[in-house]
Each structure stands twice: as structure tokens, then as C-alpha cells.
Figure 1 (cartoon, rainbow, N blue to C red):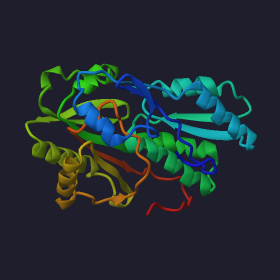
Figure 2 (tube, rainbow, N blue to C red):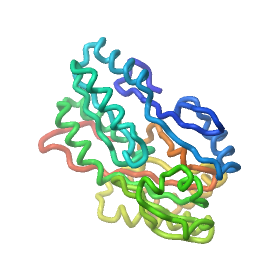
Figure 3 (cartoon, one colour):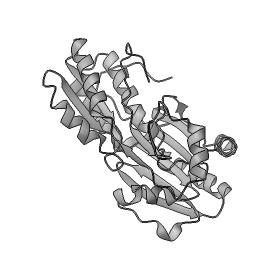
Length: 283
């Protein structure tokens, strides 16, 4: 979590697994979680939005510090009720204008919205203009990922929430794409190498019409260190792999489905900024 002197504050989701509640991104050890998940695919996992007490403390702090406006970005409403919960809590603070942006995505692309908001606010854009820019960013955020099992998505309710059914493909490696609240199956393959290659090929295909100077690779991920190494090597040995600029920031993993048998690519492409406006670029 960022310090209180930071302009970005993380409101943690609460995640339930192994019969306990944990704050995602705070007291969940990723390796321990993935090791546990690999051996408990039949156990459902659920998440809850940030608790009202944490939201109240955060908004009260902003008021005490003299802030009049705040921008809150959340993961897709198809995956969490966070946006609705935060909007209801925001209504209790009329002295603070709170803009709630449902990003329509999750994981690193979701975090990118906060980074982009900070960049533009520091550069002098008014909050209303920044909010409009964040809304325009949604179609540019993509997650391409592969799973060796869909049990976690099915048991956790993710598939039903996004309106997808993948029962026929259980037991195979499934390559999926999540963007603008929508989950779609891109391909079903039979082994890890083909899954890696399919993720890379589909990522490149989605990038084809995007200017390279506007493309930002948010990150690669796998729940297993060896699998990650193989995936990363394969990704970057391709001429197309890593063709955009990399910009690291805090990942909030989609823990309800990430496991040792998964591999992910997150990326964003920047939409045009308001005309005649100059902001510090990403490096």
C-alpha cells in the first residue's frame, strides 16, 4: 500500500480462501496462495469489496487534509461490486466530490487507470477532464491469459457473472481475452507451449493496429516460477514480444482464477490526450 503522503491509496479487496479472509495485495503471499490453489481447485473462492470502515476512514482523511475531489478506480463490476459499494459510501460525504470509475478490467490494467490519473492531475488537468480521459481509456485495456483449468473460474462464479460457459473445454488449456467487461475464449490448446504461443499470437494480433509509441506492456504473470520463466523467455524471444514500452506498477492479481497453471499478459494503449495538452510521458 502506498504511504499516506502518496497521491495514490489502495483500497484492498477482501478475499476468502482456506476458510479465512485476507486483504488482497496486503496480507496475501502470492507464492503461498498459488501453492494452495494448485491443490484446492475444487474449493470456491470469493471476494468482497473494501469494507465500509476502510472507505469511511479514507474519505474522512481526505476531507481532513482539505481535499475537495477524489478519483476512485475499481475493477470491473462483472467481477466485483466495489464500484456500487463505493458510490453508496461516497454519497455520505457531500463535502467531497468523489468520481468513481468502473474500469471494466482488472489486475494491472486496472492499476494503470490510477497511474494515468496521477500523471495527468500532476500535469495540471482538472479532475473532470481526467475522468473523461479515463473513460476513454477503457477500450484500450486488454488481458490475454491462459488457464490449464477453469474450475476456479467456474466455482468462483466468474464465468456466470460474465455470461460465459466453458464447460466443454474443461481439462484443456484455454486462452481467454478480457476487455471492457467481456470475457471471450480465443482458443483451446493441448499443452503449455501451445498455450504460451497462442497468448503471444493473440496479444500481437490485438496490438497490430495500435501505434507502438502508445503501447505499454503492463506485465507478464504466472503462478509458478518455472512456468513464468519459460513463458517470459518465449514472449521476449519473439520479434513482436515486448515491442512496446514496459511500465511497471503495483499488480492486483485476479486471485480467484490465477494459479500455478496460468499465464497472463496485460497491456494498455494510450488514447489521445486533449489537444494542445502536454504531460510528462511514460518512460
